[in-house]
Image (cartoon, rainbow, N blue to C red; front, side, top):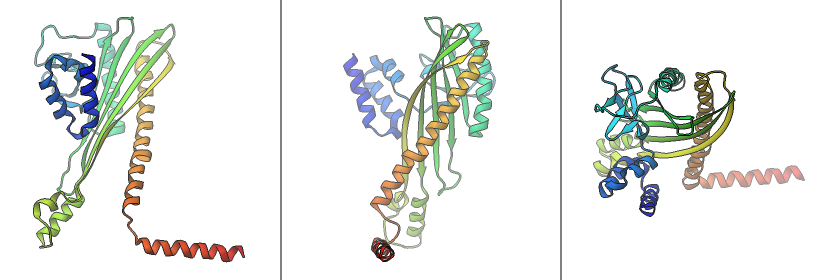
Length: 288
């Protein structure tokens, strides 16, 4: 069992992240007995669903799934309806409602749109765990505009130790960006009679960047009351998201830009070489 699941996970790491949903569905169809193990181990883009009772959108993932149904954080009901679905205790459900309201404000502050959801559940050791989900989709409003999506999955565990609480946080960000600007320009050139086939011109220059990043953190915070868990977890998630966003911008995109510039220069390389030689000559004259 373990070897088969490990092999499937190893295969998923080598397949394009843009097709993760289709690849997972194919593996589940081939090995249905290991569907729960695979779905619980592979992060997939979050699905947006609508609560039939309240009309509000919420996010569906493996953490609020029971069978083929998903629990809404707003009404606490499953869709499709499920009579004996897993639900938090009344005490934890009260905290879950407050957490959803708090992170809905957080989402509006940092994302200016999108969808957020928070789900909590009890642990056997007396503590509790939860997941904070955030998703923002950028739809292209014109043929030449970029599109993309941002998915944040923050899974945490909380253990109370007197007036202190210990938190373990595992954060995963999935990012997908598609830039079709160059492809659109190629299509326009083809339309005006330039060389090249029309089908290839539309895809020429289209750039797709996608991938995921996971980070972990542990921290202790003072605990005055039950609701303090929300502010403590919120602070950890806020710091983690800022750190991971900076990593994406400065390290990953910065490295991609460096590689592209090393492969193909914008300026004439011969001209740049002559400028470097001229600088060396000037430095030599100054030293004399």
